[in-house]
Structures are given as structure tokens and as C-alpha cells.
Length: 87
Image 1 (spheres, helix red, strand yellow):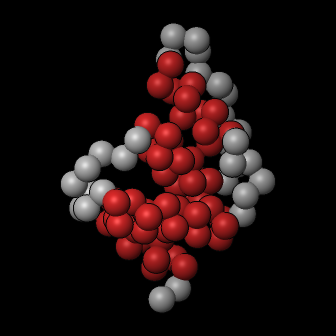
Image 2: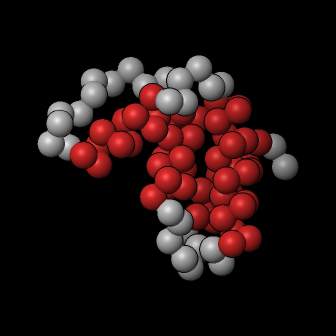
């Protein structure tokens, strides 16, 4: 199966999780997804009152330089690990 198909399947698989991943796992899922679909984070940093937005922005910014393929693979690997422990 191609990496693009695995990435699409992993996105669908996240909806089948019966236990909520940790906040850090959710941030990693978000950041790898954004890096894979949009590339490096070039958006402005959220204001100081947007705590959730800042965490998400920082998580995505930390993945800067990661290629689309690498980000897709890390997303797939993370989802596969969650499927083993959160199903």
C-alpha cells in the first residue's frame, strides 16, 4: 500500500479509537498531520490568551523541516501504535 493510502487509512483509523489519546499524543497527531498536508508552519503565533492554539502552533512549528513523506510516516506509525493500545 502506498504511503498516501496508508496516511488516508490512518486518518480514518483515528475515528475508531475507543480511548482518548494523551494530550501530547493528540498534539503530535495534529503536528504531523499539518506538516504532512501543509508543510512548515509559516502562520503567525496565536495571542497569549489562546493557550490551546499556542500549544498546537508550537507542536507544529517543532516539526519544521520534516518532509511530507516523513511526516506522513510518523503519523501512520503513531496511529498504528495508538490502535494497539487505545482500541
